[in-house]
Image (cartoon, rainbow, N blue to C red; front, top):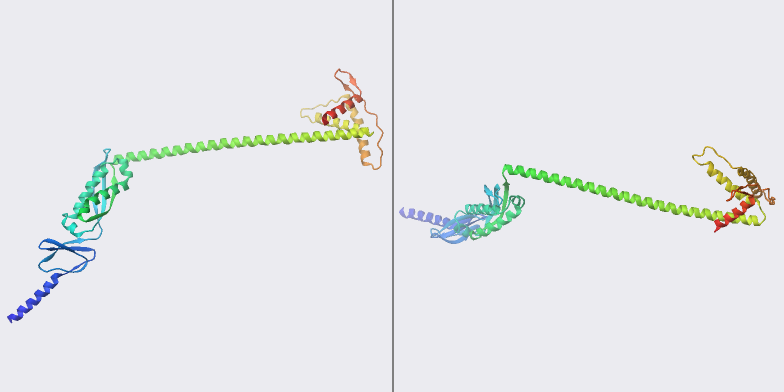
Length: 344
């Protein structure tokens, strides 16, 4: 009976010993093995064997990335502004043995180190720089804290400043400053718009003046060309009349003189302020010239007709330079001379 009890106890002791020597480490964790209180090795995730009653599990370390909040703290900036800053820290244990035996209370150590460096970094900056360079602050904190925690087997992956709160009166001043800055930009934009509008208006007026000058120039050119064509036509007409006179058709002279009379009377009669038309005595000779025109037309439109004999020319006289009146022959010579001038 006593032997049986001994065997049962021995079997139980063996089972307990085997169970004590088998350690199953969960994924994402590492355990440290100590022998007589001294670190021996690190147990990786999975099934591990240790010597019962000699070895024991020291620390159970979480190897996954972890995060904790940094409490808000008041900080005085370089320009003596009091602000409240809080942050969040992401870190991961890379060496379970160092994290277990190089520092006591790893999370509290990382927290204190982060808070101290937040005060150091933000206290060396002005308020405007502090509010506008949050990425720079995060980068500086990450470099400093990661370097400081490296001996602990920890990798700080990220530090993010969550909020920076200036005092209420300072916030109100910043709001007024922002409003003034926006009003300044609006006034500048308005002035720039007026300036552009004035420039565009002046440019439009300049282009209009240039186009008007070019139009007047072209019109003058065309008018000069028209006068030249008229002069050429008059010269040609004078030449034809001269040939007709040389050929013995004196009616052409009547036609030429009558045409000049009619055009002169038309200009006088069409004057806008002309209410009363006073004709000189020589104007009655136009009737004789008109008769010459009718005879010329009759000759022109009657086939086979012979040139009519020269009608009696009206005795048109007009004062000369000395005030004396001269016969029509003198005017014909004067007209021929004028035609010669036109052809020239």
